[in-house]
Amino acid sequence: MERPKTSERDHVALRDQIQSWLANQVDGPVVSDLEVPPTNGMSSETVMFEGGVRRVQRCVLRLPPDPSSEPVFPTYDMARQYKAMDLVRRRTNVPVPPLLWLEEDPQYLGAPFFVMRRVDGLVPPDVMPYTFGDNWLFDADRDDQRRLQDASIAVLAGIHGISADEPSPVDPGKTALRRHVTAQRQYYRWVVRDGVRSPMIDRAFDWLIEHWPAEPPAVVSWGDARIGNIIYKDFTPVAVLDWEMAGLGPREIDLGWMIYLHRFFQDLAEQMGMKGMPDFMLMDDVVETYERLTGYKPQDLRFYIMYAAVRQAIIMSRITRRQVHFGEAEMPLDPDHTFMHHRSLDAMLDGSYWRKLW
Image (cartoon, rainbow, N blue to C red; front, side):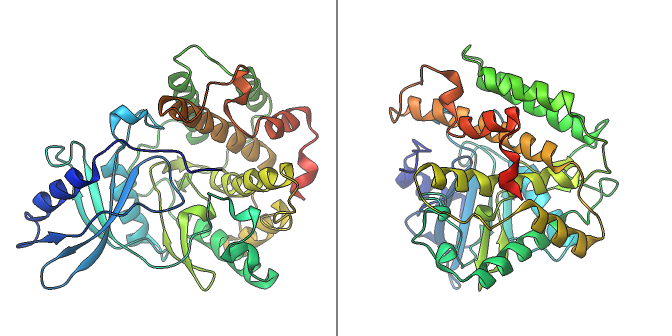
């Protein structure tokens, strides 16, 4: 499994552009060669550099992908991401990277972007998935794995302490869950504008309508709530990353996403004959920890885990199209095979999957 290509930008030219822009922030800056994070992330473009004069700062810059690279999402609101992180920083104890600058003028790099300070630590890898073994999380003892699991759930509890009635970087809308699902349908229509629809994704949307839950109060939702978007030190979160999917919604959106994204990697491991981490992020454990931390018992998680699998299917279908664009893959004959977890989603739809989550 190789990391898909994500950009066609010339990083030498980009470095010069960053240095030119940074001259507006500090006197006489010098910017190092750019680095790209080696494992995670296939949406916004992320580059790391050192820059400064008297005091060199280790920085991370986030900007939308080059439009020529078949972006994962149709729009990238960098100001919204920045403001979501700043909201969480001001209202909670959840660790987010120190924010340095937001630049909304596209004249410098061709698009708005923001810069934050780099935070050291370890991230569970996506490529190869941490469930495949030979990495720090897989090799840790069970107590440390559970410590990381509980601390990650505590991150969600902290973010969800900001209710939808408080100032937020997004509009509340009518009902948060319906607005969220409607946005996913719109995203799916954008992905399949080439006319290649997935019958399984269409069936899954029908399943969601048939099993619609009672809607709990909305809170600020991280959106991409998974351990691969957290930097850890000693199995404790020190920075929560990737806020491009932030919005408002029931707490269960983030909980279902965190549970399912582990299952996504666990299912891949099992399909390749590996044990993986079958006792990690079990639904009952997540519910017990979250209720203990917040006093709120999550409801209808089967719905939200299915919803997470649908959202992941749409994203993976888009990534497949991006790989085709870069010549890394061919379009599958079966449109359901544009996402690698089609067998898991099919098992969810026929009801045989759910025993894995307890």
